Amino acid sequence: MDDCIFCKIINNEIPSTTIYEDDDIKAFFDISQVTPGHTLVVPKKHVQDIFAYDEDLAERVFKKVPMIARAIKASNPDIIGMNICQNNGEIAYQSVMHSHIHLVPRYSKDDDFSMHWGDNTGLVDNEQLQARADKIKQHLED
Ligand code: AMP
Ligand code: ZN
Image (cartoon, rainbow, N blue to C red; front, side, top):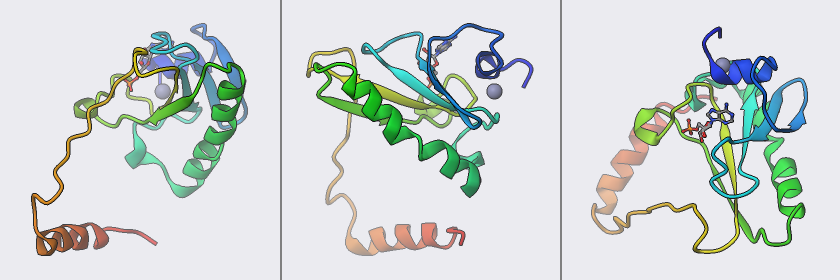
């Protein structure tokens, strides 16, 4: 897409620090480097978010993530873990509307990454949980 910053990076119209590239994806450093080595894995095809992937594209993109994650981890013995996040929609902190996967290497509890996980265990009963699950199941595709 013409006005998409990640399409421009993929087409080398905007520079990036690229660590891996093939026919399907480009992996380059996130400019913000939340932690050192913070990388974005981006499909070369412009898709907005996770809801726009078909199975073939998902396979071609997501299957590369472990290989890139291992390379990042192997590059620095101080990396002791990694968060992999994929934001979809403004409410979920997506700011660039070309789908991407964040690989954030983790160095310590005090590095510059954090996440809040609420705990709503037990807030609804099993019947309500089952009804919630059934609604989702109706929409699963083969
Ligand atoms: P998100 O908020 O999940 O949509 O992530 C978008 C990410 O793109 C942010 O973490 C930005 O720092 C990053 N970003 C924006 N522009 C560039 C750029 N020119 N090169 C590398 N990363 C970028
Ligand atoms: Zn794009």
